[in-house]
Every structure is written in C-alpha cells, then in structure tokens.
Length: 506
Ligand SMILES: *[C@@H]1O[C@H](CO)[C@@H](O)[C@H](O)[C@H]1NC(C)=O
Ligand SMILES: *[C@@H]1O[C@H](CO)[C@@H](O)[C@H](O)[C@H]1NC(C)=O
Ligand SMILES: *[C@@H]1O[C@H](CO)[C@@H](O)[C@H](O)[C@H]1NC(C)=O
Image (tube, rainbow, N blue to C red; front, side, top):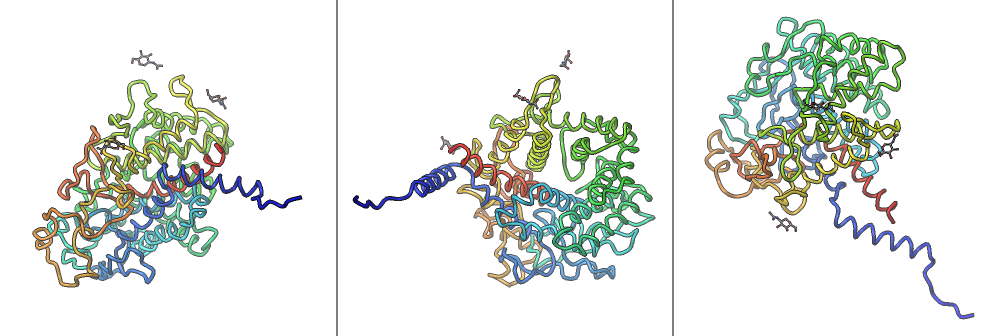
C-alpha cells in the first residue's frame, strides 16, 4: 500500500475553520482592538504621578500639589474630558460604570487579556476617592474650577491655573456626590473581592460611610460647591444617587437594610415614578430600575415583589423607548440609526444605552424571558442586536465611515478638543507653554493633534449623522471618561460573541 502524505481530517478542519475565522474577522469590527484601546484612554486621562508602567507615553506627571493649599493630599484621579478639572461626580460615575462592566463581563475581559488593565482603570479612580474621603462626613468634591481652567489652553504638565479644592461636609451637604461615590466604591469592592480582599473591604467601608453621610445630611452638591454649577450641575437632584448607592451596597453586602431602603423610598425618591429615556452621570433612574428589575427572581416578600415589579415596568419603558416600541415616547434615531438624545455629547447616551440593553438582554436570556413592549414581543436577541448596531456605528458603520472611537480604524477624529492631545507632548518639548500661548499656537492651528487620545469616544455626530472634525466644535469633538466607560464591558462581550458565532455558523 502506497503511503500518501495526507493531512489528518481534523487538521484540515481546524485550518479551514481558522481561515474562515480570519476571513470573517477581517470584515467584522475588531472588538478586541477596540477593548484594548478603550482602556488606554483612561491612562491618557490620569492626573497625578504616573506609574512606571504608564503606556500612554505622551503624558507625564501633573497636578502634584493638588489639595496642598487645603492641607489634603488630592494627587491622582482623572480629568473628566479635554480640560484638567477633577470633577467628583462624573469621575465617580465613570468608575461605577467601569466596575459594572467588569462585574458583568469580567470573564470576557479576561479572555481578551485586558482584565489587569480594567482593574487598573478602576483603581486609579478608587485610590483617589479614598484620599478625597478624609473623614466620615467630609468628601473633597472637585479640584480646580471650570472657569479658570477653560481660560487657558495648556498641557496638564504645565498647568498654571488654580487648583483650589472644594469639599462637601455636614454644613455643605452633597447627597448626589456622596451617593455616586458610595456607588462607585461599592461596585469596585465587588470587583476586587477575589483578587484583593483587603482593598475590597476598605472600599466597602468608605462606601457605607459615604452613603450614611449622604443620606443623613441631605442636599444637592451644586448648592454647596457653587463652582460646579455651570459644568456638572445635578439637574435630577440627589434622590436617584441615594437609591443607586443603596442598590450597589445591597449588591456588595447582601444586607437587606439596603434593599429595604430601595423598597421603602421607591415612591418618594421617584424610583418607580420616573419614566426616563436617558441614563447619564446626572440621571441614574434607568440604571436603578434595571438593576432593581434584575433582582426580581431573588426577592422573597410580597411587598418587595410588588415594588420591584413597578421598578421593572419603568426599566422596560426605558428599554422599549430605545427599541422604538413605546407608544409615542421613543428615543429619536438619526437617519444612520444612531440613538439621538441631544446635540451636546450625544455619544454618552449611546454608550450607556448600549450597556443597559446588553445587560438587560443577558438577564432576559438567562431567565428565559421575552420582553413585552405594549403587547409587542421583543426577544433578548433583538435588544442585543440594537446594542451591537450602536457599537458598530461608533466603530465606523455609519454614513460618514468614521470611527468615533479615537485611534480605532482608518478614519477617526484628528482634532479632538483635548488640551494635552492637541499640544506637542511634554516628553518631546519640555519648554513651558503658557496659558494663552496654547490657544494661539495649538488650539487654533489647522493641523491634526500631535498626540492621539486613543480610546476616547467623542461627542459624535448631530441628528443628521453629520460631524465636523474641528477642535472648536467641542459639542462633537470633546470626549469624556463616562462616554468610554460603558463600552469596556460591551466590547469584551461582543468580542467573545463574534468568535462564538463564527464557530457556530461554521
Ligand atoms: C397608543 O396611544 C394612542 C394615543 O394616545 C392610544 O389611543 C392607544 O390606545 C395606545 N396604544 C397602546 C397599545 O397603548
Ligand atoms: C420569545 O419570543 C420568540 C419569538 O416570538 C419565541 O420563539 C420564543 O419561544 C419566546 N420565548 C419565550 C420564553 O416566551
Ligand atoms: C462609505 O463607504 C461606503 C462603502 O465603502 C461608500 O459607498 C461610501 O461612499 C462611503 N461614504 C463616505 C462618506 O465616505
């Protein structure tokens, strides 16, 4: 018998499978690449002393005397966007969303080998919150202020603007800020439970104290910290953040006290009253309602079940309005299919909606349910398909063929409204660049930014899918940490989903 050299069948199968995967992957968005890039963005936004393993090397140390005037160490934390103010409320919301993403999609993030980076992004925020929470009823709310910061166009490394710190305390309450920071630390404590139990415990301790502080000394933080008013005023008040904090504390502790709080205050805090079509650093109701709805399978008492059912009905209002299946009150879409809430930084609402849709889709599918929007059946697959379409739009499947995630794909915004990115790197030119010199030499020139703020999700297009890549067009070209934060988990989920689907379809 003649021996023919032949590849075993299983090997032929494996090779052709790999070829199919490689070929199909070339057509599909590269979610793994998007995931890696999204986490780099948080390194670009770092304030403070940068560590030896800092990967975004056009940045250097900054804000090293933050808090010094007030006798408190506030070095660290994140710039919110294209400026250098450290705003507590959006920073905390960013950390809550990053943590929620890791809680839901930690395995998928780990499989893409980004778990360590995701935890570092969270810890950069929580380390700062620990510093800012100097005693049980004192939380530093902000370093610097928008007015003086925006007067200058400088690199963070050159900053000459005021770094005065502002706080909330018993006499100057801020239940929204205390609540959101408690939520962030409680959510992060779940993330670190396995890998760093000591740190997790510390975070939980701070979270519980902050929640008590916020609940006992009630008030809106923008009344206490006036300088935040024109930038991050708490329009929805503090009741949503108190419910939000209590829910995250319940998830972190399993202590019924927190669940009771969410049940007993459901009515007077608007948890089961507000039907809302946006989820943001300010307005948490949709997120609260969705987390509450997902507790339904585990609540035992009749009264709890009744209230949770009402939360669920509001959660589904939000989801149905994203799906355009509500009677009259749907979220607008652009002709290219992007969810559209408002002109200024619309992408923040898109990424947060995509996250909530993905999480709720998983919940429905894990509990073997469909959703009913005014009698119309909607499947979990349809929810996920909408989330995916929004993410794919972000990554370039849109009428402009433009990726709104900076640094991803072949076409993306090159004039992002970002001080550090738009000025020559401090590593390249250490010469001091003054306050107005930055405006004259860098802000107004027509060239692309010298540094790419990779992984930043910019404000994005208008209601007609139009986008003008111009540094002065901050409504569209500025990016914020809370735009990218919800994407981390979804990118990981989509990455795994597209691999599995390819294998299944083969
Ligand atoms: C939808 O709204 C219209 C007008 O408000 C009303 O007549 C109709 O009954 C509603 N349909 C459902 C299914 O709620
Ligand atoms: C959900 O709806 C789909 C499509 O209508 C149907 O095939 C499926 O059986 C439904 N699932 C459940 C759990 O009702
Ligand atoms: C986007 O890409 C499609 C397909 O390659 C092409 O037909 C279309 O003209 C492009 N649009 C723009 C604005 O570049």
